[in-house]
Length: 531
Image (cartoon, rainbow, N blue to C red; front, side, top):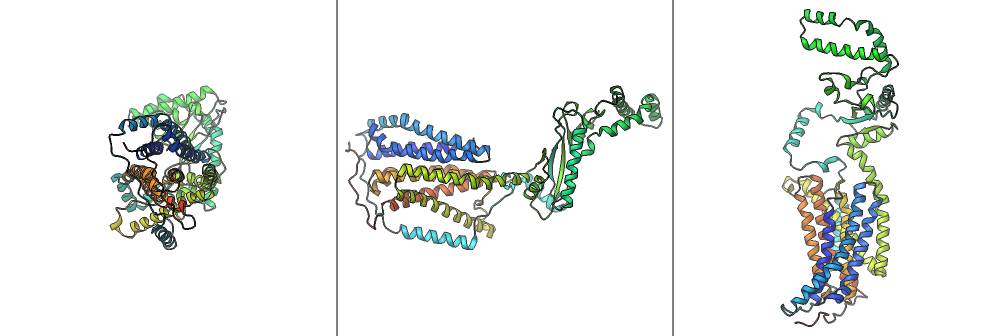
């Protein structure tokens, strides 16, 4: 996850470069003048966005925490590179091009009022109607997000399972470890495996699962093997007689070799004495037995650290991964691990719910604190937060509409899959970061240009639009990915960035200049003299 989201760093840092170029080109400024004009905007935008991403360290998922650290540090480093190295290069190019190109055109005045309040109000009303009638976008809690979109092999397996119901029964793999630490005696894991079997029967009797099977019978019981050794010892000296009997009965050489291996194992146990550990471990058998038993049993040297692979049969009226994982947690036995695709939901979903409560709330507090430091103006803070809330409202409403259309008719099957799953939930910090970044650039631009919306659009608005479109195109390309989760992530990011960009460029500056219903008077363009 952290490696895949290097695109966030590239997108945000590239935005700073575009802003520097656009401000210098349209304003006719270079050097220190350009740095004093655009430097504070880059500094505060980078610092605030990085603080939000650093807040991801509170996440329960190491990948998301690493994502926050990498993106936060990358944004700060990128902002420093842009201001210290990129800006002087751009200034030199702009100085060299003076007099060779057309003079900067004066900014066209833009009214702060118009039809946009009605349009925004209509969109808010439409979103509320969508939520009231269709609800929220579907929430997919399964491992669906990791499956390929178009796979003939997967489709064939699903067809087989559909036509052969017994094969379609949910059977979840479970790994049981018998770690015996420094004690190499094989009866330690044997006791452990028996404990797990008894706990599984108790869960079955309680109706929480249909059954739990682990191949504990394949692991040696030292007491029984000692009893067997006492019975077999008198028979170990008659190998030649047994081989002759096999030959007379018509058995081939392989049967004799198999018998010889068995007798040799018991002779080895006899020489070790009754005080030794179990005479026969699954890996001690010859022939194909180690390969066969190796599919169910594994152990280290001398029987250390054994592992058994079993199966859990969940109840038909439960969610296999979620409910079975919760039932296993009631075992309160270390070393029992549910595996398989279905187990991802049971293991990760509670952590996601925890992160929503204990990560997003601190991130919101950090966001408000940073905006207070940057703006020191309650109206600007409210406008920025309001724009971000509107962006999320419109995004969720659009996802609901697309999901409903796609489910209504096969004619809309070409529409992207719009639902929340545990992969595209990673779009939340991304959209928070880009939305905050664009909002800070526009707000500080409105302050620099004293409410002249024409200059704001000419110098900062165009750059933000270009950044938003390029970033949305990059993430939108993921919508065609073969992985369903990655495709849904690209769709959510693309729609969210487009909505955030439109609100930041069109609505936010007009909200900031509204004062008692009076529109600001455009001032003279601050661009340098032509030529």
